[in-house]
Image (cartoon, rainbow, N blue to C red; front, side, top):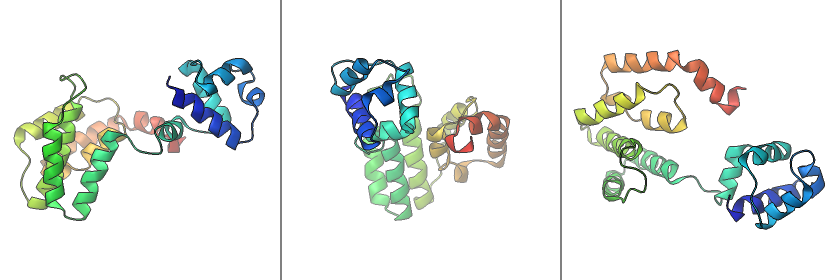
Length: 193
């Protein structure tokens, strides 16, 4: 884990007015926590989660703080597309699409996510310009969604842009897939517990 994880734990712990002993008790030794907070050592994920639970900080809140209170690049991409859509800013969407298409991909090429990001921006642009999505893009996206046993926030963020381009049969398949997996999805949502 990077030094930022330990520094963030220290800042949150001090903000909560907890001592090293209070936070570490029964999870890790006081010296281990101290070294972690100073960036001199790391701790396992198995130990980080109980520390965060004791601090009453969710993992997503913690990572948001570690990342300087900014969202992930993927989230930023989809938010940027949504904002451009609400402003009806076709030029920004075309620029964003061009950047995505020309972006150097750092993940393995056989992963579907970069293409799904591009399809989402194409869909937003298509809604504004009244241009249909290419069939191969719809087929690719539906192949992805219909094979997922669990849909996460990323999946729903992508999916929100696609319904205007889908046939009623495909929409029905998606709804069936969603309802089939709804217990799994709601179980994974932090607000539904």
